[in-house]
Structures are given as C-alpha cells and as structure tokens.
Image (spheres, rainbow, N blue to C red):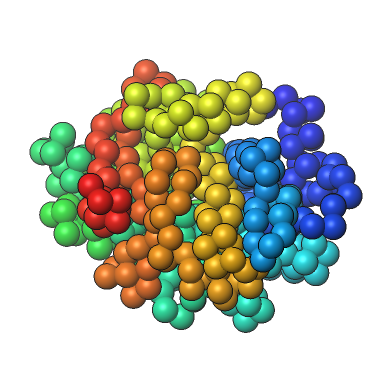
Length: 395
C-alpha cells in the first residue's frame, strides 16, 4: 500500500476523517492492529468492515423498533497488545458510545477488551484464536472466524497425508496470550495426529532480527516447523532465515491468513507453506460477494483480502442480523437471538453453533479451508463445510 493510502486508511480508522453522525446512526466498533507487524490484518479488516456498512446503508439501513438506522464503523489501533486493546475499547465506548464491537483482532487485546465488554453489557465479535475467550462465562462474545478447534485437525491431517514421512514438529509463536493459547492447542492436535512436538519456542512481538531463532530451530532438525499465530510479516522473515540456513522441511502456519504479505517478506521461502486461515477469494469456491470485495481490496489496498479481513465484513453483517432478529439494540437481547438466526455473510448463509464444543453456540459456522502457497499464490487444498451448518440449512 502506498504511504498516502495507508494514511487515508488510518485517518478513516481512527475516526478523524468521519463526517458528523446522523441522529439515527448505530456506531459499531473495531479494535485491530493498524500499525506494526500485524498491521496488514487491521487495515484490511477496517476496509472490509466499511464495505459492509456501505452495503447495509445502500440497502436502506437496519430496521429495528419501528425506526431505520444507518451504520457507521469506527476502528482504532490496538497495536496487538493487551494495554492498547483496553485503551481502544475505552475510547470507543466513552467517545462513540459503542455497544457492539463487530471485529476485534488478537487474543491478548481481546481478553483485555472482553473484561470490559462483558461487565458493561457490550456485544463483542472477535477473530481471536484463543479458546480462553469462549464459553458460558462470556455470553456476549461471538467468534466470527474459524479457530484451532475447527482448523488444526484438518490442516495437520492434510500435512500428514501429503507428507507421510514426517514424524516431529517444532512450534514458534509470539510470547503473549495469543501465542501461548495457539501453542497449547497446537500441541494437543499435533499429538493427536501422531506427530511428536520437539519444542515450543516464543519470540517477543518487538523482535525484528530472527536469525538467532532460526538457528535454534534448525539445530533441532524438525521435520515440520509450525509458525502458529505468527503475524505474516514476521512469519515471512522466519521462513527466509530458515531457507538461508538450509532447512528444507514442511512449513505450516496454522493461523496463516494469505500469501501476499508472507511472500513479500519471505520470497520463494514462503512457497509450499500450508495455512489454516487463508482462502482464495478469487477462486471457484469464492462467493460473488467475496470476489467483489477482493477485487476492491486489490485496487485500494494493493493486496488481497484474507480470512481475518473478511471477518470484518461478516461481523458487521452478523450484528445486523442479530439486531433485526431481536428487534432491539440491547446487546443482551441480541446475544440471545443470534444463535437462533440464519443470516447472510460473505460466505453465503451462516449461523452460530458449536455448543457441543464450547458449551455455548457462539462460533460462526463457515467452511474450513486448508490452503498452500504455490508459486506465490494461495491455492485451496481442502474445503470442509461443517455438518452442523449443513443441518441448519437443511442440506
């Protein structure tokens, strides 16, 4: 993205470029990293969220309680940290009177936000990967992308099937709640897949030099390196260092979200990487909505959308569905109505479910997609539609 485009995106995200609100407007909040190594997640999330708001407004807005409301999305930079996550939440709640967060990115900032939203009766949609933000203790929290319990078993099974010779894995994750939750889940699923975990390493998010970490990884001679929840810019740098040091094993990023930034930083070293949160939104299995959004993102942001970005769009659409199903702006009533609703998002018809896994039906049911980077492009390898969603849709 050019410097000008980044500046415009950030101005819009922080609210400085927004016009005065009309009286009957629902302000929706987004907390995402708009700077640092994970900025590609946040900037694309804001853009996709704005497109959902535009779609709703162009179609007449949201009708509730005999009134019609316009939608405005306000995004702020959580810098992928717990401290800034709390600051962003407080800003949106106090300044903009936000009662619904339609997207929040990063387990560490989300856990900080959640402590406030659950207490203050505020609805929170999140793409946080950690299981620690889910369950009956968090009735106002809904997850809008696939997470380890949905993704890891399929991606690890795919790797094992395609590479039957592999016997062990070494994992690398950021040293915070996001990375620690990811490592815990990955250890469980790799072990269940019959793969031995050699080691689980961590790095600080401020790290810029990954040569020492790559040296430590290579010294243990792993068959597989799983970069788990490592942001794309960091992951690409690690893969490049591993290639320089001659390691030639199987590359996996369980929370890998796409090829653009990964290839930009990792070059040819990114080829062959398996990802659990990526999708080809130009491909034959993408919906018309996803193709249109992806084309717009490539024109404006100069990169394709990934699953986290698409979660920004889907969170806004889910909020609309919940408000209309409850016929109320009360977050508690919306939370009670959402699990019963079937509604339209970028993937088509969707619903919330997975009560048998988490104790509450608050996980968005969408296709599980395993992809691989081939010649610098994201290529779909396996797609699984959840049985629960098929049943809800009468398929």
